[in-house]
Length: 298
Image (cartoon, rainbow, N blue to C red; front, top):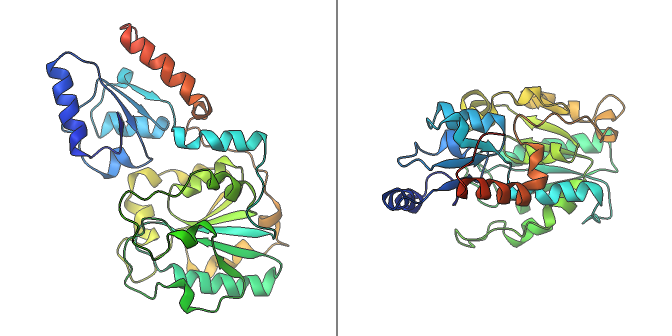
């Protein structure tokens, strides 16, 4: 059962499976599903997670047994490892950095306006591509990109299909666009979200915003302080924490080394195992072990 860790039908299925003696395997979908959604009212026999961090969440928070939790990654990222071997064509004909917005309420427009000024000052040949989160929460501030005349900031091509449109809860952007966007960016700017992990998978420099916008309670400063899955991201090589709005200039100073340096040693296995690239084979092997009653932690 692929799961986000809180849908009711999942727990009903596990309950019925236990009643009939059927083994269950829960495939945890996302980074924060085990630490920010709910406590599992029915526990599966086995569970796969992103990496060692999420395995620790499964054991400590959800009270799963160590040997029942397997770090397998996520199938959504398989394409990223493939794109490292054969780089896909860029969706843009110019040099760009990606601003990957997050779902939590945050004043992204003010940051974009400041970045526009900084690009004009330091690197006029760079464009900031703004990609709002597809399922962003309502904001309590100015929040319409088209209300401003940006000089160096453009709305992402794919985002134009969903930004400020009510496409329903079942909408999901086509995933084949992500490798093209991430593989060809110069670097990423990101309020805290899964995108910072995705950017580092491509060995790109990531600047994580962790400052207070003085408007929303769920601003990046509070998210960084209180959200369990963001603990330890400062250990990721190639990721720089920007903890104050006034420090945004760090992205462009020092002779633009932050832009040119796009090949950095990656240190992500704690958060997302490299076994992700072998997900289909690993999940097949795991199911065989479960069916044969020989499933043990590798």
